[in-house]
Length: 117
Length: 115
Image 1 (tube, each protein chain N blue to C red):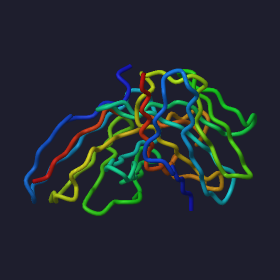
Image 2: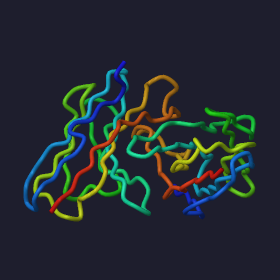
Image 3: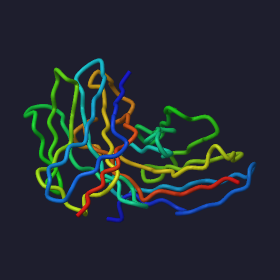
């Protein structure tokens, strides 16, 4: 079974400060990990993914995420937050041992990021 | 490309009524998915279609049916709506290139209220 946890319902950060949104996962095989962002009244938008290779993944809008296998984590980061980054962020995982069945993902419960001036 | 489109955007139903949520993608994607989003629960998979002609249950299929009409269209039907089905429904699709490792593309959602 695959699962993902986002331990923080909300993260508050001042504009210009670095931000981190936490994600931990559980899978049987190798994990395939994704981050999505959702702005109010919109669908989810893809930010970045980790499949294999470099543990630091760079994505859209200046976001990056660090894969840590020993801690089973995939935290989303940005060096300098913007007010426009305020949104709902979802982490998702797929177990690499799964075959077929399309690209089923398991999503976390989401973390609301609020960036204030 | 319009991407993933969903209709309607909003719908209010009375308990016991039926309706079909429509989803279409024009990106030649193979796999399509239906999710519901509820506060504090993230996205939960209702049904998915790995390819044209196949459908499978997800995490929360009870009370729903689906039809993969063709490669482009994947509809979700509520036969007898219940207040517990009040939610925001999202359709998504995955491109065929790269196997099973591609990200999902999401539609704008349908907000459904069941009274």
